[in-house]
Amino acid sequence: MRKVIALAFVFVCASYFGAFEVLAQEASGPSRTGFQLIKEYFISGDWRFMSIVLVCLILGLAFCIERIITLNIATTNTDKLLSRIDERLADGDVSGAMEVAKSTPGPTAAVLYEGLRNSGDGPEAVEKAIVSYGSVQMGLLEKGLVWISLFIAIAPMLGFMGTVIGMITAFDRIEAVGDLSPSVVAGGIKVALLTTVFGLIVAIILQIFYNYIVSKIDGIVNKMEDASIGLVDVMARNKVFN
Image 1: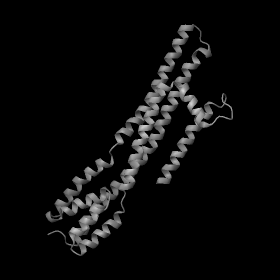
Image 2 (image 1 turned 180 degrees about the horizontal axis):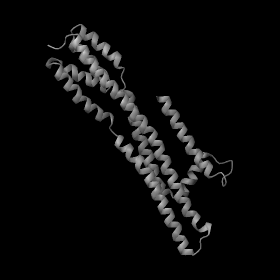
Image 3 (image 1 turned 90 degrees about the horizontal axis):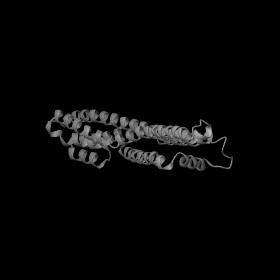
Image 4 (image 1 turned 120 degrees about the vertical axis):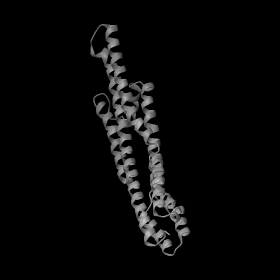
């Protein structure tokens, strides 16, 4: 999955550079690099307004990277974990099984630990503890997603706002000059188009990361649920319940 997200990021970045190279095909020389074109268009689109879109990209990527790192750390081999717990419970060592779950990082191990901790109160208490603590772990896994969604929504909206501002500027110039020549309105229309392009590109990049993060969370939650069901079966098979 890491390779998939890396390839997706490369593809988006390539599209990012390619879009501006197409826009500048007529005006730019072959010696200009993609970064120089982006910088030029960034400034042409009013850098003060475009900086807000750039901040959305930087903050959104920061949240995405933090979530990806956290979720990769939280990923656990549930089959191996359940096998180790089963070995301890087969020997009647509930404390040892709890220690195995406690020493394993990740939300799945934390949920299994809570289930083992309530094993003395019967299967109903174990299931209740697993469901309750599972909800807490799901909340922790989804932490920060609301901010990524916010930046995905704000970036194109800021771009469209720049479009409106650019068109207003163009009509102001038409009114002031009293002429509808291309040279009068070109500047305002250019600002309008550039802010829209930048806003949409930021939203596309963050949307790809957001979808990857959501799919990663779904996979962890599914493994957590399977492991929870497996734990109850393991405990019943080893006659842990009184």
